[in-house]
Length: 229
Length: 345
Image 1 (cartoon, rainbow over the protein chains, first blue to last red):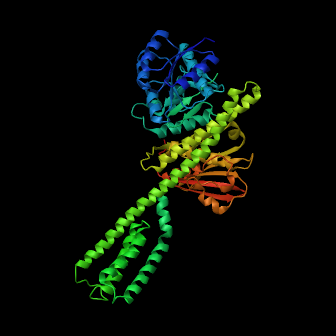
Image 2 (image 1 turned 90 degrees about the horizontal axis):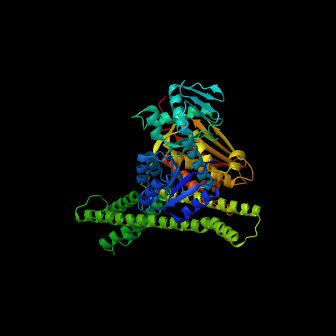
Image 3 (image 1 turned 180 degrees about the horizontal axis):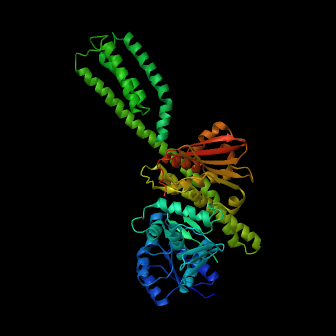
C-alpha cells in the first residue's frame, strides 16, 4: 500500500497529538499546522492526499479554508468538528467537505472514514462505466444495476438515486445535495421524496433495513453510501 | 411551566375552600364587632382572604376571592346595608385597591415560585454533576493513573482496564448530551425542526448508540409498515435512544428488551418493554419527573434525566407517555398523534 500523506489542520494541541500518534501507529505520513494561514502554504508545498480540518480555527472559520481548497483541488476533506450542530456540518459539507466526524470521536471511526475517502480517490482514477460496491454492480452504459448478480427492478428515480449514491460512495451527502442532484433544482426541500425512496431502496438492497449495510443515515445531515472492500 | 399549572389546578379547590372559610369567619367576627370597629378596619380585615389566596399565585383565584370579599363587604357594611347599592363612589375605589393588592401579591408569589423551582433544578443538576459525572470520571482518572504508574500490567488486563475507561467516557458523553438537551427543551426558545421522519430509519440510527451485544442479543424490534411521520427527527431519535437506554439499565440481567413501533387509529405508538424486579405501580407515575429515580436502584448510573426528556419530546409532538407494570416488567408507551399526512408519491 502506498504511504499516503495526510495534512492535519487543528489548533487544539491534545487532539493534534492524538491524531499524530494515531497516524504514526497506522503508518500514514502526516504534516500538521494550527492555523488557516499556514494550512494553505503547507498544502501548496506538500501536496497531501487528504485533509483533516477542524472547523473552529483560531484565525477564522475552517469552512473558508475548505472553499479555497475546493477552488484548486479535488482532494478528500474530512471535517473535524466539536460542534454538535448539524447546521455547521451541513454548511461545511456544502462548502465542499466530503465527510465529517464530531468530537469526541473514536480513533477507529476516524481511520475508517479516512480509509474510505482515500479509497474513493483511487477508484476515481480508473473511471469506467462499471462500478462495483459489495454485492451491487452498476453498468452506467446500459443503465442497469445488479444485486447479487441479479438485475434489480428499479423505477427511474430509484435508479438515479442509487446511481448517485454509487458515484459518491463513502461520502457524506446532505439531503439538499441529493435532492438537487437526483430530483433537480427546486426540489431541495422535498424531504418526503427522499425519505420514501431511501426506504424503498433499502427494502431492495439491505438485508435488514433497520441495520443497513449500504445506505447509512447521518442523523439531521444526510446519507452516506458505504462501500467497504 | 406546565407542571406549575397542574399543581395549581390540583390544590386550587382546597385553598379556595380554605379562603371561603376564612372569609366567613372574618365576616362573622366583624359582624359581631361592627359596633366597635370602624368601617375602614372592617375593610382591612376583608383583605386578609385576598392576601391568603394571592400567595398561591393564581390570578383567577385571586380575583374570584376579591370579588367575593367585596360582595360580602358591600352587602353587610356599606350603607345602604343589606343591599348591593353603592352611594359613595369612594367605595368603588376600595374595591379596585383590593384587586390591585391581590394582583401585586400574586405576581410576586409567582416569581418566587419560579425561583424556588429553578433553585431546586439547579440543586438537582449539581447533584447529577457531583454524582453521576464523578462516578465515571473517577473510573477514568483511577484507571489512567494506574496504567501510567505501573509498567508490569499484562496485556489482557490493560485491555480490560481500557475498556472500562472507554465505557465510562461513553456514559459521560451520553449524560452530557442529556443535560444539554434538557436545558434546551426546558427553555422556551426551542426551535423544533419538523420534517418527514421514517421510523425504520430513526430506529436504525438510534440503535447505533448501543453496544453490539445489546443490539444483537438483547433487543427485539418490531416495526409496523408506517407512512412517513411529521416530527422532529433529532428529537424522536433521542426519544428512542433514551427509552432503550432506560430499558437496558433497569432490565433484569440478560433478558430481552422489546421495542415496537405500532400504527394505531390516527397515531403512532412507541412501546418499550423490559423485564424487571417487582416495581411499585404508584412509583411509576413519577418516573417521568425530572431527576426522579426509583429509590431501590441507587447503584445504577443514570440520573433520571432521560425519561423526563422523553416526556418533553412526546409533549412537543402533542402526544402522551405512560409507564405501567405488566408481566413482571415495565412497559412504557409513547403515543404520538399524526398531525400531517404524507402525500402518496
